Image (cartoon, rainbow, N blue to C red):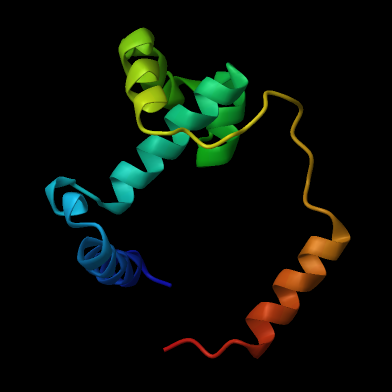
Length: 113
């Protein structure tokens, strides 16, 4: 899926979500906002910028350090207020073979439009 294709599908999902929850209309939802939010949640959950860099696919930790330059207490307070996912700090574990088989089966039977 292309970058523009993802943004298009995201806009469709945001529009559907707005119909169910009108307060979402006031939110600025873009692929970049989702990526940044994911990075901040991962940083909050793990406390390890190396894991954030790995998740984001950054080749250098210097690229990821911008997340550390942000005021962490303010950012973490905002994340807490917006129901951060329940991720327990811990070690990264690669997905199980069973999970990969389920995902492979789902993608081979799913027809994308």
